[in-house]
Image (tube, rainbow, N blue to C red):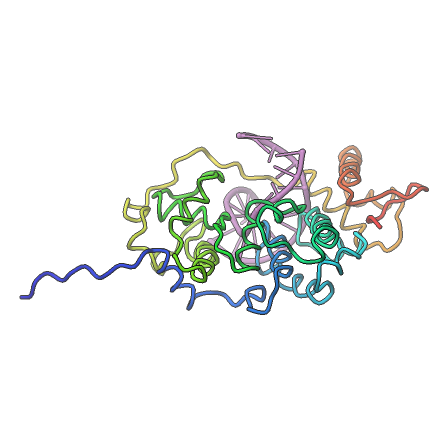
Length: 297
DNA sequence: AATGCGTGGGA
DNA sequence: TTCCCAAGCAT
């Protein structure tokens, strides 16, 4: 009988997650060392609310066609909207183009490397700005998306799900990041990956989680979610669906179309009209002098 | 601060 | 089938 085994030395959870990432990470094209900040920015905007599998082929096409911000800035919106394909939320395509214009005009065609300048770009918010600074420029930055918020909620706070985004999310994750800058950058992508592959919404795969033994949620007995019911957004019959249908018609039409050509897209004339108006307001559609509709030139 | 904004795959 | 949800942002 020997003395009770000493507890194994336990490295900080942040370091463990970085080590896990080294062997578990997906091989995604925007993570290769040769990609620049523009490629990162495009990937991040495309990935806003859109699954990786759908983004990957479109991102490759964009990088070939528009390798620099000035290339996209010089392209008419109609072509950009078509190239966006069916990624969804096509206003992102317009904003990304506007961001490219701003980068070209205000930053000499180079994606800015500081968070404040990045956040000033159209379509770039708290998350995307830090993701570009971190993954595009190798800066130590707190990068918090829905995956990270869920991981922190469980690992640190012992809650089944994350609440709404808060300013404290940034300090929460900063407290876990490794000291070394390069490892801190890896940590940022590693936590996102952990949330995407293991600590997922729905049923987390705790059996294969590298930090299951130090997870506050598991240590608390994996208590069920205890909070206000989350609203599930409907889609069928909403204006979002109608806008999508209308835009689908205009994407495939290569000449301006008369109003009658849009009637098949949606039966309810009042809703159809309202949605067409909103698309015009958003500058996703424009009307010619003779009353035809097309993607914006 | 709550809501609107696309789309399609998987449980 | 129905429901959930997938690297947010702007208003």
